[in-house]
Length: 392
Image (cartoon, rainbow, N blue to C red; front, side, top):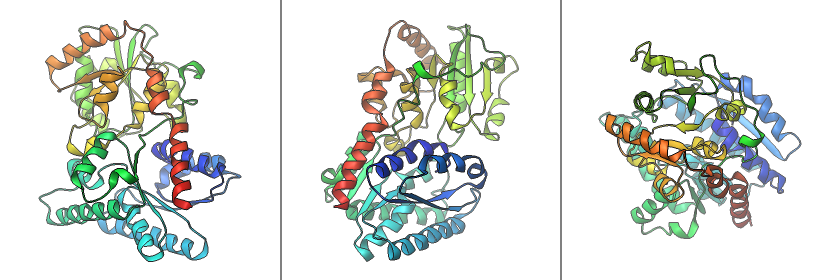
């Protein structure tokens, strides 16, 4: 809940559902360092609402056994809640929490909403977190792929992030009536918070001027994000756009310096880094002319819906990214959301620069894409309909 993702993709829906009359208990794992700075923000938003927030603190550096222990702790809390409250629904985000929801469904008959978010086990392999040639990791992978089918089969309802992933699941599991009990809800955004017309711009970092064409990247570094390729692309664009600058907005203090060490002093003169809280992200986006990010184009990413995509379009920014991610091809080709690169080569970087220069001559409304497809008020209404159907 205290992470930016929790504040953008969990908290607004929990608040909205509580305002519609639901009594909600949220169980979460929290990073102690983030919790210290963000807990008061969450407490303020849920104050006076029928929301109870229970959490355990966890260490990101823990191994499988420590993570298994976290799940057991949450399961114990969940079982205590079921024994003392009249729980009418368990809403489980991703696979680890679904282990608990499935158990409560089988033991207590409590309706189970599987909000799968993405192909978690495949992400662990393709992100290099688990190694397929490690026997123990491969056992974990096979176990959760088996559980994945059970989650889909026994869930009373399924939420996935993309149309591409829903099509895959329907083809993969023809014996499960997935289409009859599934809904696509992408990662949406608060259209009022992310509104360039109402946002006061952050102070320009020293070295960037109003006359520069500023590209912005927001979020974590590494794992899924191709930071080096992104920087290489921006450097290639400098030939066509001499006043180009790149601002990397991240709290990552470890990975980014290692990547930047690969570049010369003169190359790094167009690269700037800042750290900001989630609430300050709109003010930094308001400085930019476009957003840029590249994601590792692997199988599991067909189920990915980057939060930053919705936020950047809400701020009326075109996006430069790559093909093969979630429903990108639909939104970028049909709705003209920006520039899609097909490969990470110098030739493709140069081609995309010329395409971008043509793009910014047009007066497209990128905010319309977010308003139509990524508005969290519409998503909240969909969640409410699902809750009403399951809890009745």
